[in-house]
Length: 389
Ligand code: NAD
Ligand code: ZN
Image (spheres, rainbow, N blue to C red):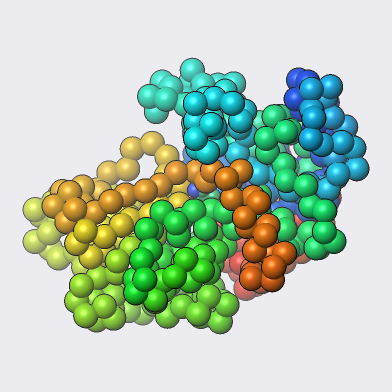
């Protein structure tokens, strides 16, 4: 079959690889009809996460038709149309029982390696680092789906792929980021990053009752989408000082919740609101965690920091002292996707949201390498790419 594979920094290729087979009784094989590129794919693309291996198949936002199931699979059969969550979860461990699917104790075959790095092992993920399982991903013609009774959601309506595909990741991710912001009536939520995750965070914050959403980015098309689809006010971080503007917009109190929907690949100085004196006193040195630092500085006292943006390893230069003294709460994590599948499918079916608003590019899988470059560079108005094998 054809699949998009990783070969190092900004080197992905579409190649012939062996078709996946049923390995365990709870596996299903899905023939992929649509598969998106995610901001999380840009971490391996830019060689920014450890644990990638040459030839790994990327992709974790797929959907398609079940073509084969293992003998232990009870809820799916050949012919079912499914969206596959990016989190692989057993459904039975202590964590899955508590709906903490991205923390599943049983789905990471490289748990020992993860434990050495993180102390405990999170769940396995499709198409990502071997630290998180090294599972073959879904930017391919076929995908092996372990724990097939726990992950995939059946789509029984005739909604087109691009309306339900993002249940695999970015809609639940934006929704969980907004839930994690602990929004109360009248709240102002600031969202750094107007990529696909930011866009769904903005819309979810509105659904969850935010009074105002302020979205921050530098890409004009993304800021425009945040205004037009997300009803957000926007800040272009290269044209305005983010700290000063947020303070002016919130009567000097700061946003009630700040969401980092950017993660490790931030641009800019990230030093908004940080004076030379602060730099000396706090010893801000790293040029990496811009957005986290900015969000901590800008958040109102007693507010909440929600971090869907992905980080790996140690991140220096975080003003943890400010965080502690300002009594901020922090919530983060890979999304517990399975938790959100039914309720968010309901919102799509009810017409409350049409997630396809975010799609700007739809291309055959063979064009994957070109589309990675376009999405990475934010060229050609690119906000979300859907590939079709
Ligand atoms: P993306 O790369 O398309 O979007 C990131 C956006 O951040 C871009 O528009 C960029 O211009 C903007 N940005 C860069 N520097 C900024 C700054 N200093 N201030 C404000 N905005 C800035 O990616 P995406 O698909 O939207 O994903 C965003 C993040 O969410 C990534 O880190 C991704 O890995 C992560 N993610 C997490 C989960 C999860 O389960 N927690 C799931 C999916 C994606
Ligand atoms: Zn993703």
